[in-house]
Amino acid sequence: MDYKLDIWPTYAEHEWWRQWATQHVGEFSLLAHWRDDPHQWQILLREKLADLLGLQDTRRPIEVQLLGRQDAHNFSIQKVAFPADDGILVPAYLCVPHDNETPLPAVVLSHDADSSKEAMVGLLAEGNPEAAAGARLAAAGYVVCCLDRRGFGERPREDYASDISEWAGKPEVAADAADLIAACDMLAQRPDVQSRRIGIIGIARGVPAALYAAILHSGFYAIALCGYLGRYRALPLIADRHRRAAIQKLFAGTVPAGLLAYADFEDLACLLSRRPLCLYQRHEPDFPMEPATDAARRITEGYNLMDEKIKLTAQISDEHTDYPGTTVMDFLDDWLKLPVSPRPPAQN
Image (cartoon, rainbow, N blue to C red):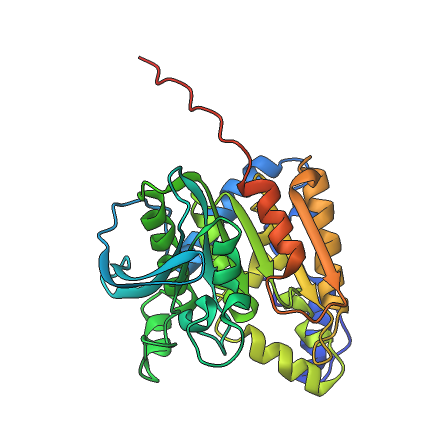
């Protein structure tokens, strides 16, 4: 990262960073440096992100333990456990439609910080269980996997775990992404799942893990990111202290060290340009919308550059419905319920 700035001197570090944010872009900024070779850009940035996260795209058979089962209105809820790439068991619920004689599309859910797998499938006492994200998706004909992210639900963690994970070269968010990748592999080996029609939804604080998992694992066919989706570099430019603190809290622990030397949020989103992507966010009073609208504009320009605009859905809504919302449900239906073409025969 180039830390030398051609500016007037100042004793205020926040002013230094404000000017840095307006003057510098990452080495792998698609729109600033790689317009003429987006194919090579994708290869190099994906490799760099894998290094920063300590993750690789590896597929493996997943051994699943069935821990329990109960019926809901028009689907069954199966409690399962399967091993993450580090061997730790991942507890999850599968919502499986009763009508599953033919393979169905599937969705992996990455929940928010104030949620859990139980909330996602409607097993908590409060609220309407049929309105839960997993229940709605299952009712719409998807096999759904809702897992606890690390540190939530049945997966408590000690205070030191985040730090030592960072020191060991695998950020906490990378471990969450690896769990989501394992969930995708687990779904792909089920006979009631169409393995080439698996999507992922990231909700609020669950967005970064879903984004990284989708970038590094081609098994996710369609990706929906729901929540505040702004540029990381914009943090020093937010004048309102309370809004800046809200954004800082939202991003904390989700951006791998060194990322801004290479890329920003819009570059990561554009790495998904060969697959359908939905960016859906509401107007939030605590968050400034300028970084979000700027990111959406840059992502749209990137998809246009790579002739993939048809695969991008980007919406900032005034609705106050719970995520994922009608826009995301329609997006998934449009892409995950497409017929699957036969694979070409293997060449001798």
